[in-house]
Length: 346
Image (tube, rainbow, N blue to C red; front, side, top):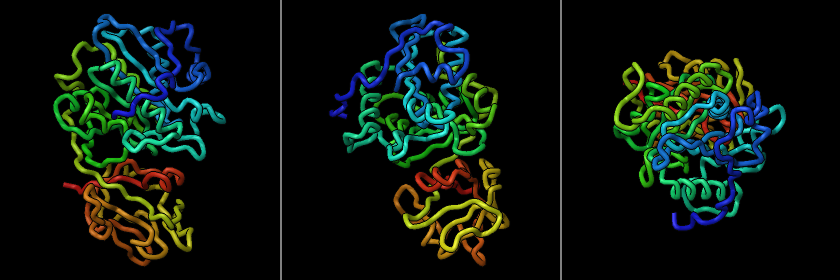
């Protein structure tokens, strides 16, 4: 963290915007942003603050939608709130909220760990970490949408009552992971309580409601770290592992096998998000060998693929009862990130 010194002015600063100045629609609000933006909302207590990051991916708008809604409603926070909106340029492309990141750019939510290079994403990540260290907020939430239609959930790398309480502002589902990918939430161990909130799919109206309700609580409740919020008991999912394509594999989605060599997942696989799959549930097809096309490694780097999945005449099935989440039917995300996460069913 010693080299968090560059690009300290990477963010456009917008203190206390008036409700009439933020545009009538989310798209108008987005167009007002000149690039990565830091919005400060002055609260009733100026000696304390909380932080929010969102739009790390340009195709995940629920956090921005919630911020626009709360700014337009002139919500008065209980303490200073610092809002960081990152992938503005990617979000603006085309009709808006299409690109996860700009072509040939790195995923900024894989850039929050060394080594850092001179790329825009690494330097923007360093600038955000530098801002967070200088502001010293009591906590940070990072608001996302899932890559497919899904219920809401929180993700943390650090399990304690403070992280439980933060997630419970938004959802009763909590994933605890020790995967190290360079995500923003991984600073929890060293800086401050930090969680990722996955509000649900970008096309799901419920995801926007989750973001608005949770952010409103985050801004206005005086004590959010010492008690759980919401009516439901937290449901925990520990140590998920990522199903990924091998470097040479291809991906498609269809009801029949579409590739001579590669993976074809059924379009309906998205319906299994936070649901169970059993050895009776076909997930797709694999042309070629299982290990030649897919990899499923745990946090220790051990290959788990054949423990959890098998091929039957090129059809892909689970070997055991599993719970899947972050299932995507977006081939770009499947290719560059992962197909889904897996946890064994209890």
